[in-house]
Image 1: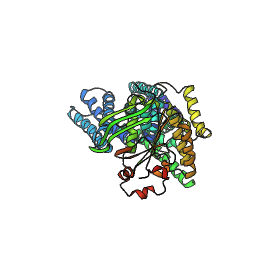
Image 2: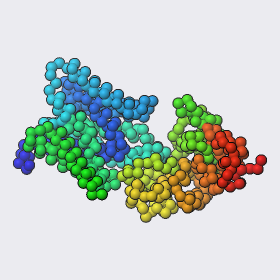
Image 3: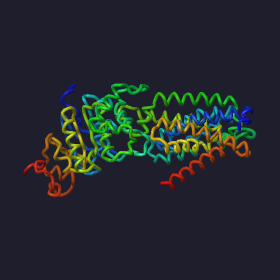
Image 4: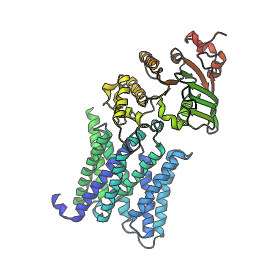
Amino acid sequence: MIDLLQYEFVRNAIMAGILASIACGIIGVYVVVKRIVFISGGIAHASFGGIGLGYYLGINPILGVLPFSIASALSMGWVSKRSRLPEDTAIGILWAMGMSIGIILISMTPGYAPDLMTYLFGNILTVPFSDIILMLVLDAIIILMVYAFYKEFLALCFDEEFATVRGVHAERQYLVLLCLIALTIVVLIRVVGIILVIALLTIPAAMSRQFTSNLKKMMMLSIIFGAVFSSGGIWLSYMFDVPSGATIILVMSVVYLLYSLMKSTSS
Amino acid sequence: MNMTADVVVIKDVWVHYDSIPVLEEINLVIKEHDFLGIIGVNGGGKSTLLKVILGLVKPSKGTVRVFGDTPQIARKYVGYVPQYSLFDLEFPVSVWEVVLMGRLGHTGLLKRYNEEDKKAASYALAKMDMLEYKDKQIGKLSGGQQHRVFIARALAANPKLLLLDEPVTGIDTIMQEEFYELLEKLKTKMAIVLVSHDISAVSVYVDKIACLNHRLYYHDSKELTAEDLEATYNCPVELIAHGVPHRVLKKH
């Protein structure tokens, strides 16, 4: 593995993996404990509209995803709280709507859409350095926001009603959390792609929950798990020449399943 | 503004959920040091009434003043113990962190909990005899212990009004007695309102009783008429009177 590090694209890949692990380690913990996996999946898939927008405007698709995922997060949060539709129905509709917008925009773009598969399934081995800078900035925003609102997020996730009674503007805080999920998705797209994002948001966090009951420690552990698994996945995908995003997810899920099996048989 | 005497003033409040009235024409004045029990059937609007006082539910008609202000502003002085069992007990949070949440209204946004917050939290925990469990994960405690933690969380805010929603559900009789003794002590410092569907549990301890079944029957005292009870429970009164200390029911 060490001799692989002489290649710039491998160094970039490892760096991208670590940056992704930081974002999904922190935000994934909230997704898991607040049980908002479905809405997170919705935001991720709807962000495909942003990929389409990027192609259509002829800019870096990631830059199209950024505003689009924030917009999906805000509208999903708003609709799920305010609309008379059941929450999961509303999310399901927006989920599909975002993807449809993406498909239409791509079809309207003249010519062939190159690396479309990269955005759907990720390819960490082709991450350009400019995207790493963007991931770094987004990670910094996520860390700062979670540091600033740590106690409010904790209260919101544990008992939204009580948080409101104690003067926390719960709805606004919830929307901020969804926006951070949107940013995390942007960070993760290059690594595992839109379709697989949800695995990276949930598996490391769910795994860390097995080892600690402290939210901060859960975040630290998730980051470590994420970094170890993504590096392992990158190495395996390079060795066997298989897609990196799927390999990372497969490594994670197999380890998690084995661990759960071992735990349930030993108890 | 009459800040000292009237803790809560509710005037002609109506609440509708999907155009179905849940609360109708509620008029209620809660005074300083009141210890009020509100009884009524499930679905009669008890929790909704508490949420109106907390400003969580907006009345479709009528006015609510708490400490002379809107419920949203007055929340700072109101402690709330929600109905038990509404929590995800697997949630990775310690007793200490839960009780500190009671201080959120006192610490500003973007600030850490300060010494005063920590002092208030440990004082509230000590009062509930739960200080030694402060590092435990909330789900590792027994039901009764969790209940004490949630009361401590409400007390950590140093409230002047304490609202309890079905506080004795799920705790055994001995603990119930201890619980009421605690409220007996607390009522010198704050007004207390507790709602329950269980008339016998409440009636012995509270100083005043109201009946709620969409409408409120209250005479600012511990006396209820047979008509009040019938209107509340929609069933023969002797069934209710059975097992209830006689002083609840006035002679007719």
